[in-house]
Image (cartoon, rainbow, N blue to C red; front, side, top):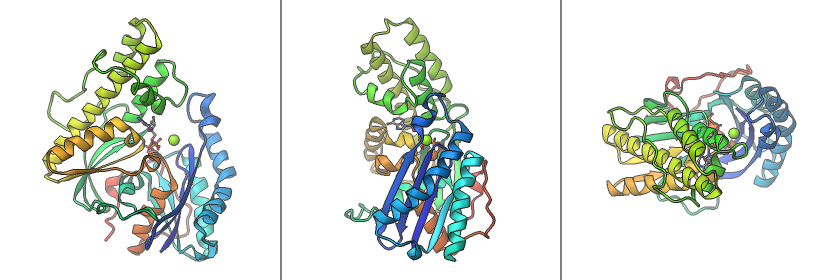
Length: 345
Ligand code: ATP
Ligand code: MG
Ligand code: FE
């Protein structure tokens, strides 16, 4: 089945074509980062308008790259939530209109299920994966708005094991970068800087690891960094050392809780997804930790960790193939609990 996927939940316009027989055929992401930079955060109305401008050209471009004609599309998947209501409505409206015109089914996808399933997708033309991970497994979702540990009992059957009580991991990266004067959006830049920093010069807390449980809290870490930065000499070398101390604290905290979750559920596979999953030290730490206990960790390629249309096309394809789809109403769910989704099979 050839599925066109559309992502427009926040400040990235993503489009992809996923072919269940061959894998991902093409995908393109247009980032609105430059548009929102001067405001230091995403302005919802500007985001919606930019999705209106970019979506159809991106659909044409992606179909061209995939070498697929519009009439060959057999299903349309779009992000129905959670996210910014206006931005979601743009993607949902375009997706529903295309599906109606093509007389094919359409399905609204949960954005976090898209992230979660991304490590299972096949990339066209790439040698077959070692064997894509199959449930049951534990998923760590680490993005700009979420930090969750989820027990994936089957595709579509998700049990929340723990989540952040305040800032998400990506949000902590972005806010920490900002308070050290890095340009918006600072997360990836902070991670790059950490690569130049020395470990152990600054040692920050590993929040909530000293007590049982699988919840997280990252907002206190930000305050610790702020104090260290204000009291420091403010040099470039110190900034890199602080960045390294911060990154090590986040990575170790996530790793400790992932291992706890894997032990508690007695699975041997950990799946990691969301923008922070692109972090190289997180990837290395989780890989070492899972190998040490005879299991494995699976990540999407870094470009498919952050928002993209491919994950939506893939998650939608699984549900469309199982016969699921909704009626022609353009409906979005800015707030949406992933554990309430129906099972796929
Ligand atoms: P959500 O999916 O929860 O709605 P989102 O879609 O905004 O949030 P993503 O696109 O999955 O989030 O990820 C963006 C986040 O990932 C940002 O907070 C960014 O700082 C973070 N991020 C991206 N690359 C890295 C990296 N290499 N190291 C650490 N954080 C990173
Ligand atoms: Mg974004
Ligand atoms: Fe996301």
